[in-house]
Amino acid sequence: NIATLRKRCEAELARLSTRRFASELQAIEGLKPGPAIVAYEEFLKKHQADPGTSLDQWQLFDGLGLAYAMSGKLHKAGPNFDKAAQCGRGLDYGKWQESTFNLACTLAAQGKPQPALKLLDTVLWVDYITRFDPKGKKVRYLEKIPKDDSLKNLRDGKELKELLTRYAP
Image (tube, rainbow, N blue to C red):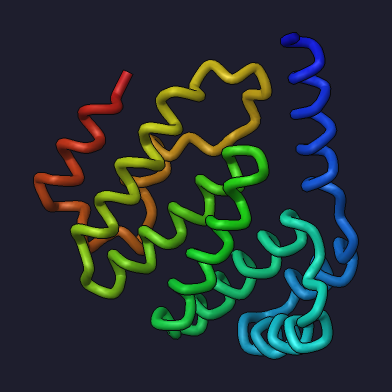
């Protein structure tokens, strides 16, 4: 029945959202990009056999992607954002959406507009279908995309304008 299914789903989400390495990963987030890359890579080596829960892994790979992106190493940022998005699929949609957005920004900055636009379309679609989510504490990508500097390569293109218009309220 529905009540049993709901309890199972809630229990599974709680299990996936449990943190084992929260304090260790949060300490790395406070570092500047160069030292953060070193610390994240050391964390990966130290916990190679058990990198933690899906939420730990999402934080690890999204953080590593951000550190690489801020260091200008976009070729290393993209694969980490992709791994973070994969980890985020089992979590709440906001985690997946954030990493997918970061991957789109990385691709745009690398001069790969078509894959970036495809990912932005998906991010905006999720934004659109979850706009009435009672949690209400999520980023609105429809507002963020036109302002994000990493998407400046796409900003004047008709494809991005059409995409933003399609999802406008």
